[in-house]
Length: 301
Image 1 (cartoon, helix red, strand yellow):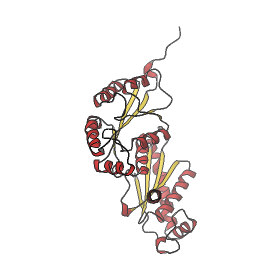
Image 2 (cartoon, helix red, strand yellow; image 1 turned 90 degrees about the vertical axis):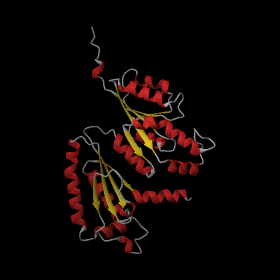
Image 3 (cartoon, helix red, strand yellow; image 1 turned 120 degrees about the vertical axis):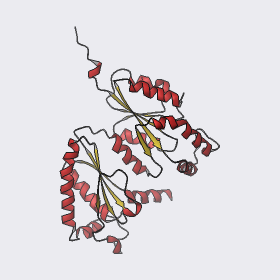
Image 4 (tube, helix red, strand yellow; image 1 turned 180 degrees about the vertical axis):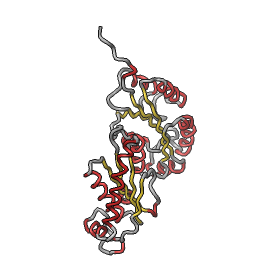
């Protein structure tokens, strides 16, 4: 007689339900989760959701997008589905709720000129109705991300921070440059201030360039204090990374800030990311202020 596998020994199916008011960034979050290795399923009728957990777990976790456009959608039906899956030992379900202030949602709808699903002729009325409809689901969220003041890049970083699938034996490192004038980015684990280094902004030939340009890098690294500072930063990061990994942390975000977020912090971010990658760590990098300028330029074309 062949022994049948014990269902309790089978891996659980991980599922993230992504919801929130229209315009808050649900589609962006779904795309980020897909890039992280999730199987994306958008606008599946709620009556079909239980079928996703029938049988053995899929090889990949599921990212299920749900909003008011779903067939047979209701807050009560969604909460019932969440409760039912929560009771299933073969399922690990989390609710990601993307929130946004009504004023910002209205601004986004005015910019895109899209119709709101609950207010085709009056987006303000549709936004108010949808926020009220989703209030019970918002209260049940496991992860709530307020996208009101987030750029697309900020939202991507937040979703990655919460739902990266690297596993217990790996840790992802994100190195970011930023401007102190625009405030410290959300979610930083470690932050270094680069404003004491000499500033290329005061050199007319370097001012229009950024820290990825060789001339700017040469200028910043020629500061007599640079080598000691960078060596100590790298040593500290390399020392704490294994400790964070042992604690089960899946992602570590390091911020490097300067006055404008264009020269010194960018050069340091590039150099630190390269050194960590060379040391064998999985590294991503981003430059917040450069991304904002690029987005603004694209919007003006």
